[in-house]
Image (cartoon, rainbow, N blue to C red; front, top):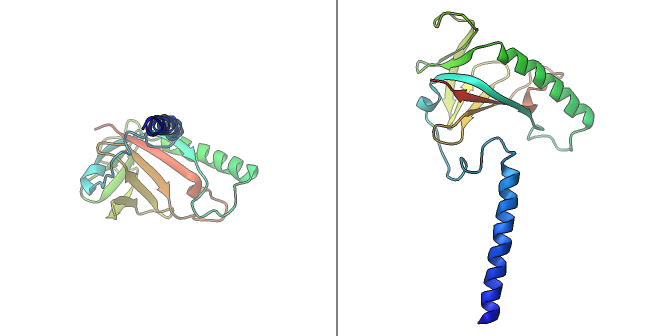
Length: 170
């Protein structure tokens, strides 16, 4: 019985150490481990509102078979900085319930279209109708938006590497 108790204690200790290590790894992931504890399926209403750019990162595309080269990572980082500067020029992204989106520039009245278009909703994701096919996802109730891209307009672009975070401001 003592050996069983010792085995349970050892297993519990190893599990807690492993969980702690996993938690520290997950804090580097885009969504926190606390946010990802339960599966969440957003509705269209969750995306409606005004969103401010809150972060940007790169990650190799999911369909990439080989490890990225330093040159590929450098090119993606440079492209990410350019696109981040572009998005940073806007005050916020507004997503409306009538199927439209608008990126507002500082000082613009609320209604004019600066850079706008329409969106669709499919399989718990909101899709902006653009050449790069941005996909917006929310992984936790009242969570931030994670925006990724599903199409490359040309062979030199690196949109598939980009991940942007948007935080709700209203």
